Length: 635
Image (cartoon, rainbow, N blue to C red):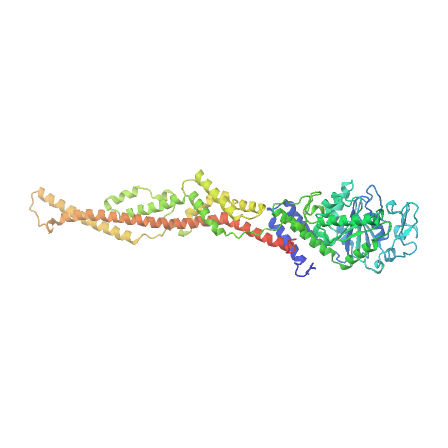
């Protein structure tokens, strides 16, 4: 089901939890591990709390030694369960008083509260006139007398300590009751008395920290002497600024002050709470001795319990606090250490760290709209040089000229070309178009990357990563730079395979090669015929044989014309073929350069730019998810 919303148009708690879970997954390995673990802990804890009773509200009374929280617990519950003291911790483990606690067992098991006490309506206050033996009377040295629920005979009760007593010699005072509690307004209340948060026993402090993270509503009990203590403000109240909707602050022992002094203390405490980010948190002045302020406190608790929304408000605050911790870690402001980022002293700051609240958390920074396509040019240039593309392009032009001369050169000198190695085969590169068969790609013999080329390549990668991460928070910028170099070990092999697999030109030979070759053979035949004719004439003249008829072309005999014409035409065709081969080599080189650049660009995208784009996309999704987790209002 869709859970309660805090206000109209606010993001639902379900959506915020999903956003927090997604933000934690996206931040894993990029941001501080404690912040990520804290966010995941909140998601897990929320899942457990939602599966437990939502008809019960766990309210914790927390305070320092001598603040009187145990006395308040006894008075509110109408029992003497809590042992009270002034100068030393007397509460070692948390205990619970339940109003209509049926069905609350799994919740208390999750809270790990073994000491539980069911409060009957008759045992609770029902008005200014408490029934005989059931009211709460306090006197110096005698403590509070409660009824059978305290474990003694009716009218005898148990002691709750001198801190609840009146001045020496004052008679017992019946404390005005909590209107309506007897009629069931407190049904579903689970009141917890926590150990002292400043206890000398570390186990007590750890128990407080644990339960402060879990309970639905927190009631901080302060006293006039230590209400400004930095321990409570920096360790608990300030990190819990997000939890102002599930918090009540009580200034106890106001009876020890004059009315004017009590008013000044309350105003000063309100100022401190406002500075802690807790503006609007209810502040009640009470006295466990005289009962002053207790009806107001009781009415406030009863309304929160009857509302049945504190559990959802608590989870929403935990989600916001955890999201704020992720934002701070993302902004490089330092992750909050000391435990989970859910709530309490481990929800955003280590004890005494004075961590900022969600209200003033660093705002998320939107990912810059950087197109990795715009970063490809300089990177491809550097990688092309490192891959030996200029050498290959030059070899393509030379190979074209070499093969052209071999196909169109003068037949008398053409065979000499066969003794010269093909420039592409020397680099162990296939002939143009030979890769269309899709066979395996071997390594080339391109000269290894020089130190200068490798330096240029590294510089280009750093510059591309730097341009892509401009404007990003430091942790995410570092993640982008790391992503850009994540495939560095594969880069040189990838470039070499890309060069080897690139088709460097068409497979078919140019038609003019065949025409020029036939022409060369034709003029060679004419030259050979003229040469043989002249040799025959010379032989006949040597043997003094009669000379045959010798045709002429003008004044020039045909044998001479065929010989000299064949030689000159052959050389001319060879020269023209070389010019054409040079021009064709340049054209083939440009085509090969484009093909190689495209292949190198693909390698640059796969091994450098795609990981960078992935990190940028990851950050964009993180900012969207964490914004949802923060309820879309940034705090």
